[in-house]
Image (cartoon, rainbow, N blue to C red; front, side, top):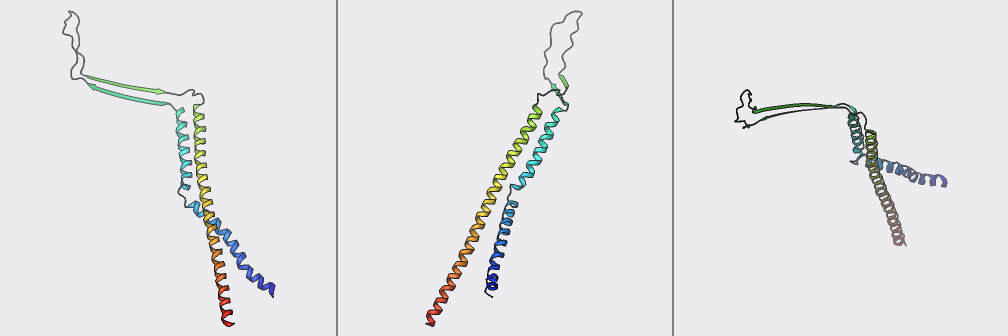
Length: 174
């Protein structure tokens, strides 16, 4: 009978200890999920992919087109008349159009080095986020431990209060 009573008294504490472990993990997960920088990890991946795509375009032919039009209000003229030579006056309007196409044949490994650099920088940023997440997890653990400690102290105080009340009853009875 005493063993059964002991097991019944011990069962809530064992169940509470198991539940507390689960709650700690849940608290850590929720703290990480609600941390604003967790969304930054996905954004970093997308930015890395976009940068790598942009670097890959350096191998493509590059085309530059330019156009320019000017109007001169006054143009110089030659007041000299040479017999047999006709001098045409300069137009006041000038137009220029240019087109340039270039193709990168060899870059000396610059493109590959830029890709490696972008991957390394992304990894560094992701590790910074992991450090912040570790800090959040440890802070959640610390707060959870403080709550559990406060609960234990509260239980102790309640037991102490009950003990004092029992002694008061005994003293009054005596």
